[in-house]
Each structure stands twice: as structure tokens, then as C-alpha cells.
Length: 224
Image (cartoon, rainbow, N blue to C red; front, side):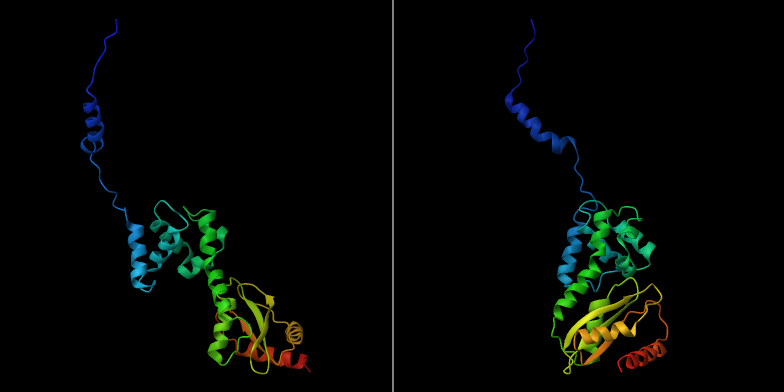
């Protein structure tokens, strides 16, 4: 005959309640709450001015990598691409060469500069009047910020310097871009423009005065 054991129900309940706390010492992970502290700091300071580059990138990765350490990945990215600007301008496939960066993280990081351009462009909806050099520079930046190769754009305006439209005339390489006078004139005629502004993002810093003078002269000849 099998033996029958009887255990007091209260004893079972007490053991179940006691074991997680008394039998195992619970310790908090050193990194617990780190992400929230970083977010709180951003909100409290209303921006990123006091953040170091790796901290900015680390916080950005919070939203593309829900779990795991992002500080190490941020530092590896900066080591590979030189600085935060280099990271944001890198192509997704380049970002994925860094350990811990998958497709989702790479695409998320690559979206940042195009998103900034998109927001700036929304602030400059046509007809936008270009009243001074500052307005012109801001308009050009809204089109060219973060571009990975040199590009040449034309901004067509009416007699009051209100923007009629813009057109990318050509796209080049990391060191040069061709500006075709015929395409510039076609853009001006297409918008029935009174004047045009040239917009170019030289990736390689070098004196460009002579090139600008040559372009103006060639466009002037083409328009006659």
C-alpha cells in the first residue's frame, strides 16, 4: 500500500511566497534605468547641446535597438566613420559592417539627414521669397544637407525673388560635378524665371571662384 503524505496548505503557500526573496538574493543590474536617465536628461536640457557625440548616437540607437548595449555600438560606429556626421552620411550597407548594427538600425540611422532636409523643405514651401544671402543659404542647405556626392541645382525665381521651382541639373562624384549650361537654361525657361541661383555642395574643399565665374560666363553666352 502506497504511503500518503499530508502537507499543511498554509506551509505550501508560505514556501512559495518565501523562496523568491529569501532563497535567492536579488540584485539590480548596474545598467538598469540607464536609458531612462538619458531620456530624462534630454528632456530636462531641452536638446543635445551638452551631449557628447557617442551619447547622441547611443540615444538614437535606443529606438532602433530595444535591448542590449548601445554605447559600445555607438563608439564603434564613430571609430569607423570618424565622427557623428560621417555616421549619419554613411549608406546602410556601410553601417551594417559594424558589429551589432543590423538592417533596421542602419536604415534608422540613414533616415536622420533626409528627415532633416524634409522638415527644412516644408518650412520653405513655394512661393518662398529669397530676401537676402541668409535666405539663399538656408534654402540651399535644405536641399543639399547630407548629400553623399556633389550635386548642382538651379533655383528659379521671379522678379520679386519668389521661388518658382528648383531642379537638380546634375549629380557627380565625391570630387566633382558637371554643370551643363543648356540644362540650366532649360530649367529657367521651363519656370519662366526672371533669374536663377546656382546651388552646389563641394565635397572637396577647394577654391571655387574661378569655376563659378566660368559657369556664369558660359550660362550668359547660352542665354543670348
